[in-house]
Length: 229
Image 1 (cartoon, rainbow, N blue to C red):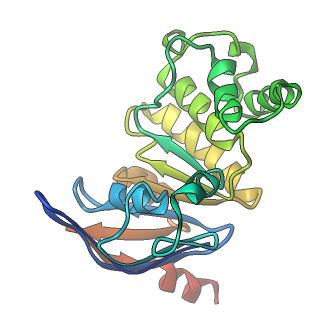
Image 2: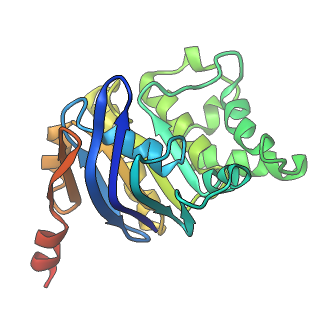
């Protein structure tokens, strides 16, 4: 599903962001990507989206390779990815349902199909009663649920979440994470970047990929396999 093979990323001004990183996320797998700020978590997520290319090595995502993908293919790849950010990135002048619908409209979806799809997703994330509210009328947890619905609206294969609970209180954090668990249980791969250690401690049975200074320092995948065995 996602493979990074000996990937390095060097920026001209700030220097190395990733150093020889290799990892593999299987279909339907859930993994935490963790480490202090500047460890390289967000860089990995940008490379998976092909927003940037590695300086060396190869990123493979659902059959697309960073070494061979053409510019016109990148939008097709991104339709297979749902992306959620810490700061929500909602359109403040559009209602909840309009924010979610917008992600379908830009792909050229038929208008007759948009409204039912949006309605089902808002019901799934518990926001059907807030469909006509503006983002500023919502709590932080509710805004992130809108962002989740928007990320799921095109039926992606993979959900990428970059510090999605960083601006939320504890109750909202666990509410969003339960939503991610439901999504994962339906077969979607989830890669969640976080430095919330309490969340990692609360769910020790999930894979944790630890990063520091651009390198993977520990990957619990081997230990989890051994435990299952």
